[in-house]
Image 1: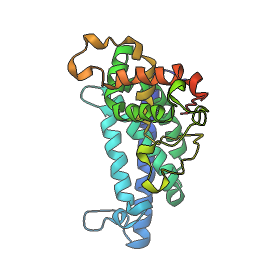
Image 2: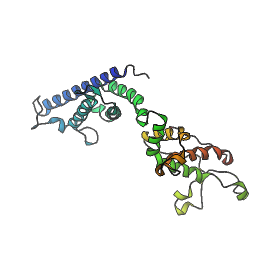
Image 3: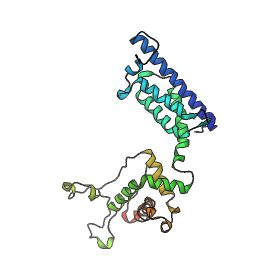
Image 4: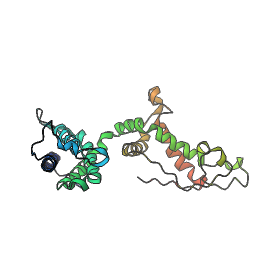
Length: 257
């Protein structure tokens, strides 16, 4: 979905955060009247700290969390927005919508969530580089271990060369990687149909960028830090293993994000 004019969208987001803060403060004051008979919350009687929400968080902590995001989003002296705060705002909005909305019933939370989500979807991918070369550099740094693991898994299930295999072994089958099996299971290997990887969103963006732009890398021109064992070279190996050996192994690799 379009975010429209970015500056206007950021202003609207900041306004939504401010509305949420007003609601949170109203909750604190209403509870203070019930619990302490005083509408003013001061350091001696902070009723907001006595109202417990999800996982031990208090209403005061929630208020302070959003107050800091409201402050950090916009630099009043320089009159500029800090878009690096958008993912944090989106995460907080999603967290409160899932865990705290049932306690508080914020009227503006859904709107805040929607605005922050659209901005996060627009800004998030740019955090991993603006140019193709930046994306492969950043992606390789972040997801090196994950790509190495995927390559190892592919190599672990690709059968040996046909001429080196017996008749019983010649039928290609995807099997569990022996390196990760208990000793008791080594004699009873099962065919594997699917392998699942659970990782973070940052790794998803990174691995896709690394694979997509791995062809831009010139390994022999790189520094020692970026040579053959670097994730970008491993990404090229991942593509090679998944394509050139797929026919021999009669296997199909399906990637779903």
